[in-house]
Length: 428
Image: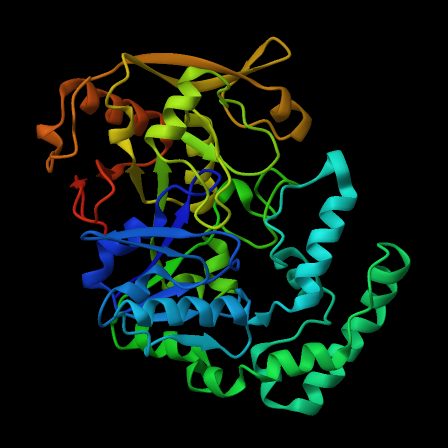
């Protein structure tokens, strides 16, 4: 049976949690393979809304084993806060597995994230201040702390001492902050050990064995393609690989075990934080999309930047990720519009450009070239087949499909888990 990857095909917040939930009754494992608690999934189950930040959205589906894999950076305070909140609402969280090789976000990572971002002033990246970037930097610099280190106090103390030796000089001498005591960090991390111990596993081996048993493993990417550290709008990106290739390195599952890549796109575009955004709106249309789509960050509450659908970005995501199927979300947000512009290309220095410019400077100055489509002026939340959608809505979807590089297999027509139109089966 297949390994399936779900990735965001824009700048995040496309509705990946809903796509995961749609497949939930058919899958056995849901794996978070990158990122930390700097992004969130909002999943609606009946009348209940769940906002997840660090946990895989599959934790809400009975019988599914949720996995936090090695590519994730884990804030233990956030992890247990989320687990306790779900338990209080009657959700069984006992199946959660956490990779022994996942890296830990500590107090000093959060501190460094906040002070360095403020220090940048007008050059700020727009991070969430939750320590994700500094934790990944320590991982690359080989001074990170992994989950497995918490179970040997001597090793843990040595690693914290090594990490703080340089960081305290930076905090005190550059940022005029107090030094952080080794005992403060060690004691905090050790306080989680007994609660954490039952969850920790060799998750790469466990996932391999699951695939060998013909079970279905779903890999759930945090953030999105345009925030990938290698393939996104660098430096206005996250600190991990949010594209489908990250599913292998971030989980320890070989690339040839992945059979399908599902890209999630909104029927318009949003992003949070700084960086280029060619179709961004600053007018009443932008206010309408933000209010109607409730475009505020699941993790931060920040208003999202909003814009029209960008077909070159969708094509880019299809190519980078090897997208086999798109899930188009929030089509219902467009219900009341008379016309709907779609970016089909860019103008850069007076020249029409069909694809994303390789130069960040060119992309920053790119002007969208729009094609307009008539709206349908009709509530579509009750539609469950493609044929039941208004003709103009069908035409809009087919137009996006023709210019986005892969088929649109599922269409979200409302926030509920059952408010979807399925055109093609997402499972092979």
